[in-house]
Image (cartoon, rainbow over all chains, first blue to last red; front, side, top):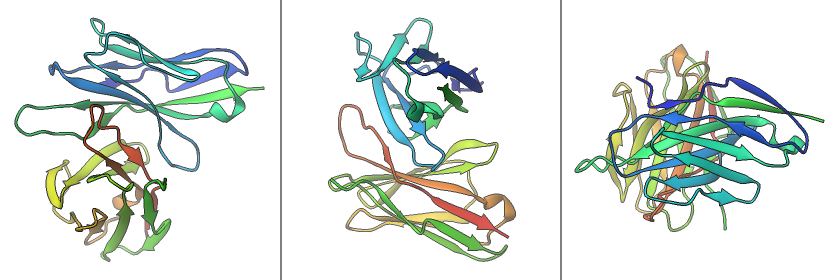
Length: 118
Length: 113
């Protein structure tokens, strides 16, 4: 089973509108972190926002917010007031912490390509 | 503050050759991660180094190896290159913190002919 599922291969949004990118995850760990990254066509992965599994409040960073629903194992990214520069691939990722091994690498979803229309 | 840097930006090799990719982490970060982003395969974890030691490796053959130097910079070596090694190789660094957020470099695009 996939650990991170992003069901929307591509999304379109009108400039200045809000858009939600979906992400569901699967883990048996109690302690984990969820991340969203943006990858423009240049290739660099840009960190957007983080949500810890024990955080009770949804994370926000400027125009980005994370809609965290722990019981549903979902961590959707909401981008408000979309801009043309938001056109890019968006990846949801999870970091699990295995007891003992201390494994810290990220597991990524397949990504959603967001296109902002003027 | 300088971000993660990687060199070279592009690398073209032929099958059977060796490739060496380099990464310098953000100052103060001790952990370095390597990921492969091949077309159609998404981002796959390759290697994790921390304090000079290899801490974990992904599901890749032994011809993918690397090391971390005392200044925390890192090198990824790929021996006996195969066509399917063509990919964007991304390096990330993190510090010990409550979030352990990984910050990525611009990547090295490796093309194997």
